[in-house]
Length: 277
Image (cartoon, helix red, strand yellow):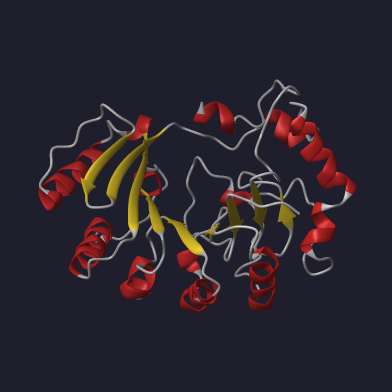
């Protein structure tokens, strides 16, 4: 088993949103990852990566015991990334959250046509930024928004509040705008979890070579895009990680990408790399 640049651990597959661009509402939920499974993952990936993201599709802040999960990862010296809508931000201790390496807030969830957020949502995000600055935290904060949403009236309200709070004038010349010290507004290309009509076998991906994912159920998947666990490589409740990665199915995926070929149907249809390019 080689080393990974980042490992995705879904400590909760619940997000509390029904965004039109996300498959989460149509996926059966397992809930919070079993703590013993989580401990097992941390033990088995120790020395194999420094960076973990406690997200795959669900919202890690939906896990009511988030502090416990964070502390276990911090005790093992992992750099922690959190990806969240921020819907449950006020349910957690800000000082604890600031121990993460990075937290990314999806403003797209708030801007989506199906959004159901409280009126104080943006104020809570800014309160977190104020807290970070007050304690001189080194955490990175990213506010993510899809580019096609920049003209929405709701985004202009966010923009006005951000400009007033941070004392800046936001422009869109680059994909990332610096709001403050280690605080950024990031403009993302639109990505939709769907199945295109065409399939492309000639493809390279970092799945299983530099990244790997763990669903909250304990199922291992090759990447952060496989939210439905279509490529089920095995369960940590039945096998250890080394056995799963050394399985014929996993080896076929790894060897295929080394040759520039996608062997799994989901990989052949995936368009995520095209978004990055």
